[in-house]
Length: 262
Length: 316
Image 1 (cartoon, one colour):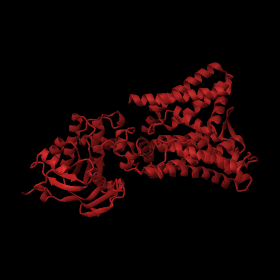
Image 2: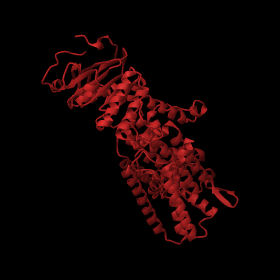
Image 3: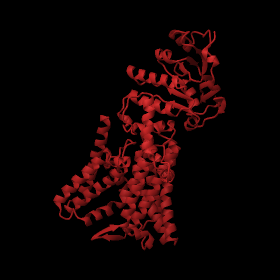
Image 4: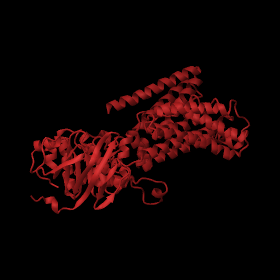
């Protein structure tokens, strides 16, 4: 069986990632592969190492061993800033924004635009107008219906906050966006807003890794599903060829995958 | 425009209204209250605590608290005066070493908070006692006959008939500087972000620990500067000084509308908060109310301010 992704370019690949905390092995020689322009969902039981895996990819933790290749080049991230500098953005479940700051400040947090002249170079004066303008453009591009970029994020709904976080990563990601349970804290309507955003970002050619517990959502948006079990990659399946109950059975170890959507 | 707007936004409105109301009240109670010379006197009275409160604001914005600031200031003031008078160091060098001693204490606070992940409350409670003890170990008596350089900022100049203390200008300049950093630079945004949620800020790409360490160190240097203002006002290096200044500085910050829960607040609110405390003390004094009631009122003001903060958070 031929899979469409076979012709595609590998954007990210990690091999043999291992991370232990004392006697607990969170990752046990885990592998992962991501193609350009695809949505890869990661599912797995609690403790399967999903979060540890994406933290290793996003620089939030440093694995004990293993290698990561981004766009064919070996990379080694010591912190999230280094991963961001290489074009990997991450959206976290509930830590995605700074509520006391406004939308524009959130979008540009950590990479503020300074005034181009001496005011920026010497006095470090932020270019507020430019950031407000660009923030509006980014938000409109993803059709997030929020008018004022001066609005404080604490006044937004959960879905809108997550939309800001997703927009922030979409604005700066050059290669891929990693999302850890982006809809876990959201209602049905707000979840569909975020899923719609994820599709829009994919259509721009970016790759996306998304962790989710929500099987219907996973099967609705994923091109391939990476099943993590006991700190390793158990299987990669094509959602078109497997049912949700199959996926859960593989996840819990009661069934083996018969084909791999490698 | 946005700079002007940030000046006028919500957090400073409450304290400003309180300030105006208090002024109106006290001007009905005493003829002497609403005079330029009395306001200049109030400013001189709040000069030291107002300066301490700048460092305190920076730390509270990061969800921390600094109980040690008053005694760090006392230590710095004894170091700078004793080195100049007893050791005979050049006054400028002695003053710089004193300010540096404040910075060193700030650095220790910051190091313990970031590297050992200890709660700021406990760390600064510890350094409070250490600074207190070191001050007494170094000197049990007041240092007198200070060099001119160390008392120069206590001098005044006149505009019309009003005397203005140079040290007040130093305090106001420091407020403006910190206001600029908070309102207009990336570092300012990062300080608010780490106060909101330090882990989130780290994941968003801010080097939270490095920034926190810098904030505590800068706060220590500001306490060192406050020590110079203190010495200039008192004309002596007093090892007993600063013992109520810890809580006074926190009072100013809280009255100024900065949230004890971090991430929210305004440096110019702190200036208003310090002025509110000064105005209440001064007004009650002019009314002939005894000093102990001034303390009582200050305590009530703090509790009211914290309640307002808490209630507004619950509404959100």
